[in-house]
Length: 205
Length: 255
Image (cartoon, rainbow over all chains, first blue to last red; front, side, top):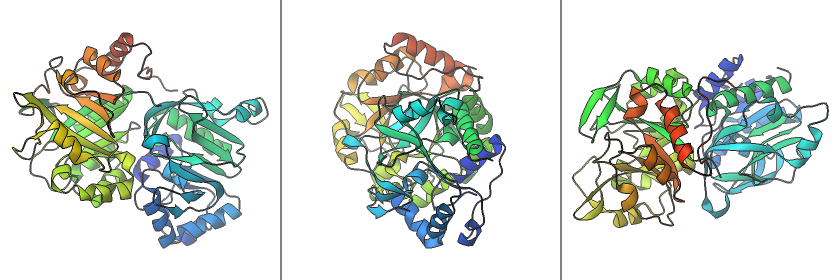
């Protein structure tokens, strides 16, 4: 189920899921979220207005309850950012599903355009284990980003990838039931479709 | 940081895609849906759909509907009639990822902050149609006969909540290889990174992309008329650059 937050490119994301063979619905009330198996918080938006809308609709509390039930939540771009404690874009608190903050990219830069993603060292090591990282299941490693804020977290993610050459900007992470995707799979052409299909399979769908 | 971008600029007039020549003459170039799907298949980095129909105070929602129905997986920036946060949110809801503002910079710059608050500053691009004449480099907006020097205009946009500027060579748009703006606009430590459009060819593209203030080059008519033009431009530009600044794309290949 897609969770609307006022802005958000729900149409593009819906189309991506259709192309991957899934047919999500858009949440209309918080009570619906209490009975779903997987939620997706879409991207494109500013974190302050997105959080305000999530709280106003009751979706924020419902997502926290969903996390307590350990049901998968996938966040895309701003949808991934709102999972954390503190959001500096509009100086507000996030859903606090994970420890960390979302701060302006150094130098006031924007990360707009297509970037390669590399796995962090720890994920690379575990890549030889029984769970193959999502990125390694995706043939292309170049994805479309469009953001001015970055996730800073010390949470020990089970899997994460970085962009911009080194371990500078968190590009995606998987931590138990939570998956945050800073890039836009819905606008990353074949690579994005492949990544989201693998993510859904990872969670058993 | 990210690869630099090869952008397709798709002018729309009266709901139909047109090839544009110097902002004055236009020739029909097919339906928006078909053009978007082609560019998507050819692996373009970003598509800028610009409604050039005059006198609009709101976006043409039928064009946005066509963007949504095209269901493409390439980022889309939309310009034309964006006057408020409500318009920007509507564009994003219909499958656009960014909005392009030009008139708003002159008429209601305070509204740009509201747009950024709704969809994020990263999703806002400012446009500057430029001419170069006896008075030097001037910004010549489409909606009026007003002219402003490039330096004055940069002061106008300083601090506005936009992430990138699209520089449009107004006089040479539609005449590939004729633009000289790249030589006239000084490389500067600007707040906003630049996208160039109008009168470019692959040589221009390669030269501009090597500027530190530039993140993308946009082509219009060539990408509307020739199948795989996007692919050949990318190949030609990458051939001229070391290191290659554009991502590699293999059209028609799923991966």
